[in-house]
Amino acid sequence: MNAMKKAYRQYLDLIFGSSLLALGIYLFVTPNGINFGGVIGLAQIVEYFLRKLITLPEELNIVGIINFLINIPLFFLGYQIMSRQFCIKTGISLIVQTAILSLLPPLKAPLVDDALLNCIFGAILCGVGVGFALRSSGCCGGIDIACMCLVKKHPDFKTGRLSIYFNAVLFSICLFLFNLKTTMYSIVFVAILYTVADKFHDQNINVAALIFTETKTVQEEIMKKMGRGITFWKGFGAYTNHPKNILFCAVNKYEIGQLQEIIHSQDPQAFVTFFEGPMIHGGFEKRL
Image 1 (cartoon, rainbow, N blue to C red):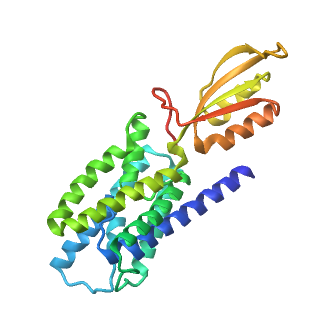
Image 2 (image 1 turned 180 degrees about the vertical axis):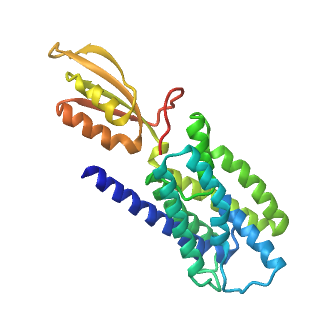
Image 3 (image 1 turned 90 degrees about the horizontal axis):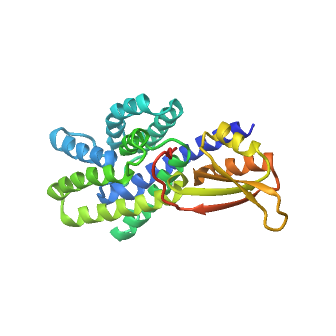
């Protein structure tokens, strides 16, 4: 039952996050001419050239459709490397985004006149949306798919590096096509978006756990149910002089709840301390 509740919660987070992302684009990004960056930003540029080449109705918003089409090869790349659940969730996210962006009528003017306010609020809304989608063990598509695949293949890969390179090229094109002001607002938007999304994405936060227990099954259950490695050594309580196992385990913040449940089920009296944010290298699997 707990697994089923977790699955339902993840899908709700995914749909909610994808909807927030699409609404942020619809309400703040498109009306202000801000480039979203990433694959959606590429879709915006493709739409710009399409409208130059052929006549399209003003009320027709095709950014969502273009974004969906560009994501198809990335989706198949993810299917080859990532889990089936990851691909299903990413596909659902893309469908939700495309539906909202394509069906809602375009806004004729920004919500407020201040471009900076639109930029900040749009970035916060989209960042929260991306963060919720990532917490669901899926993603919103685009560069995130490529980043997750690279992390899966190369655990020490810095996910922000690919986004920085891609957006550097994209914003250089924006500078050529539009103007410096639009490009600068777009850079500010993307910087705030990534910062907010990272705060919501618990999987990016490493946690080290020290577990003091007399029950040997604790380490066995952690390895069996979580697939995380354990290092342990023998110790003694200074007051009781009783022998204890001291276990060390590295997880991400999203896994803390599961780890606590396992420990409590095996030894309710276990003493546990968590250290958030340690740097971890070598042999540590980054997970969604």
